[in-house]
Length: 162
Image (cartoon, rainbow, N blue to C red; front, top):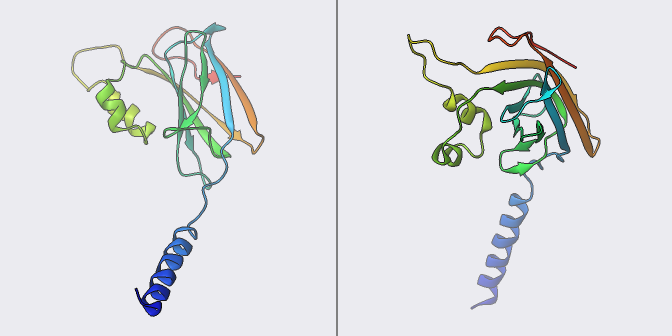
């Protein structure tokens, strides 16, 4: 290989590496965990969605509560959440998601939840119940959000949390 060709190839590779490294770096994520309870009882199998509100992060984060009501947020398939202001939605009563649906929307938890809602029908069927409120995630390395939802046990639940 001639020196001229080798120089040109070296420059092309260097330019490609430079351009690849010039993109916007993703902001650091922080670990967010917590618990969800309803009337002071652990709320298992609920979806916890942190949707960005206003300027700031563009990607939602989501977690699912375990048997003790505990959750950890994930953004797409990565642990953690980007600091910012969020609208929090806790949904209980969603049917379990199929593995095909989970795989299809693994990087978009909002669409996964939206696609998992039961179809509308004239027949009455159990609909998911949502509780929502606003929270801010700061740049602290680890944060804990504990939500105690107060409801009256009907589908028209009181939407409040501590």
